[in-house]
Image (tube, rainbow, N blue to C red; front, side):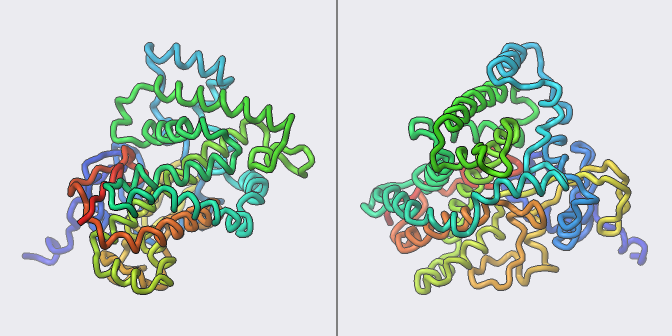
Length: 425
């Protein structure tokens, strides 16, 4: 065989919005890193960036790569059909949505805002996520974890996802916002609806009216809550963000966008992190035994779970100018999918990346992003996961999976188990 034949790279097939590799994306991630690190996905019309250094390069340069793609790509080619019109009209009338702006993507959401606007928005909301503010929630988190794990301690069958990983962040986020307990289930349903519509495996066929209806309910409730907090402020997050005594406050659309983001990042991400961590421990009994014998390794377990099965598998950017990424020249306007899940298994950044190791240090994973858009709720997610796992780890030796099948949440961007049923050994 000639040298020319040896030099030909294998063809890698990958589409970020396809479920082909959904069950186990890591082999194709490795192939991308090796053979096509800046990979053109023709169906999605995205360049997929898979190496850790290249992902960092993009995340470090908000002046060259816009976060507008976070909503623009998701809404591309999405237009209502005739059957969606009644729901769209309800969204306009009851949800008070400007249709033209809606399909351009929310202009003032932290997740898709660029400098200098991003800095102003982040500064206004970050005062509610200081280390001291987050730490104050630890007693409440411990109380909830103890309550939710009662069936498992009693030796009863227990689903880690529905019994703990789902309700814990929902209660914390809604209590932070000042939402009445009766609305918690609705908030969880709204968050799941947002994610499933935007990034679900059935995204191409899911009727927009379902999304319109969920968004209408969410906006109608939040408007009522905001108006109430303006009249009768309390100590909750909504009161702080609309308090006119503050130097800067969020207007209504900015507040809705922020809470929408908080529902996704502060809810679904933490749910996936807890479920993924427990699954990894059950799959690696040596690491479970290690943590059981050394509880001080719990923070390392959380970081390794974030790296091993990143709750968010990719994020999106668009090039604002012609730029080189990983040796590939990308024209201005190009959209990029930064494959966080692939970067977190990169052999160039991690020793033995396909080994689950709770003692790994350092661990420069990008599960929470990097740079100016580093997840604002990362500290809260870590705290909830650490407290939950601290209580769970001693109990896992006495249980086994009730079902070997793995059912993942209906999202191609988020990665987490939809269920993780356990039964006594």
